[in-house]
Length: 518
Image (spheres, rainbow, N blue to C red):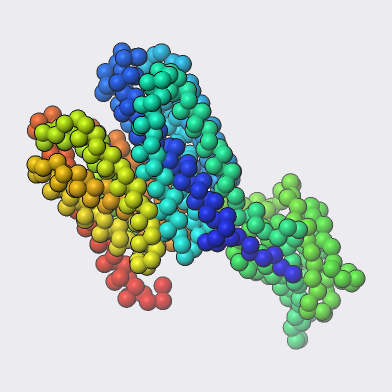
């Protein structure tokens, strides 16, 4: 019998994958969000201005998104589990090394580059991996998984404050580095889908031939049944179908959706695999239609011209330029960039805005906590609502982005603290909503087969918002002597992003009417 697809879609181990993503995101984003707590202590330790230390944080923050295409490329040959595992090792080494350095230059290397590089290998990889285990419940799974970011942002700043008070800055960084090693444990939950194949790891080949009348030519069709896909290999010249060529077909069976009508270069194949007839007859050209051959799926070490050709044909390009030619992808990219710009603005500058509006420091700290906890609630509820009520998550993304933009425009005019924290809560819910559905939105609009590549490019583009937002908002504050204009800018960016995504929806609808079969 053929190999069955036993991947537990939407059930069982799939939720363990969600747990792995949740934990990894909580540790990475929590560490990034707690840098503000470390800032004062680090400035005393290195005798450096806060602006210089903040630039190292910007570098680390940029790398955790900007390396998304790199992590996507590395995941293809090495697997997602190993990429996340290595990212956990690198980020832990970076923080542990930072606890020992006394020079600001080395701080940039250990924290900004090494830790940032580790984070970059982790984030993009864990966010797309649930798509291999979920189908109908993908938006819910991604919403729950991304909520780890909100949980980490809520817990880690308080944990960092406690560690600083108890163990000083060196001990705090050392312990945080040890905590990040738990990412390696979470990576073990990312089982590749090949794990769920049949236990005997055998592929069934069902060959048959048909004799063409008035012709001495025969056809042999070999059908490889593997997982949920069906792969067809047709060979029109039976004179070259030898045990050697059949062995080569075992290699080709490992490639998915491969189809060819003539492979004369199969004669170059070498004896690499063993073919075992399932019945007593050894003649492959028997007229029996149901003869089955079991091929042991050995990993063949030698290469041939056929194997090289297949590998070169199926190898994905280093950069998918066709994706950048797609106007729908470009519009989605612009919308996500605008949304992430506003997201960073809410977390970074709510305290100084509260101070400017006349509220106390404790009230400003409470406002940040309100944004953090409502962001967590928004991510979870966004996944649930998107899974239950929206077939296309881009509509929910647009709604959340518009709500965020409107609240950002209004909050700068508030004079009462309780009204202020209400709008902070609305901002948190809105940002959590669109952050929780952004990946499922990309999967809906561009297709799941393009999700890893598309999200890598979107994350890389959006990573520049981490660099631009602090510098641009600071420049606006210096020129206007007010933080209000930076919030007005983030509101304008949100409205522009909504327009870009609405344009994408309109264009796609027109294309579907024009090409209904596509």
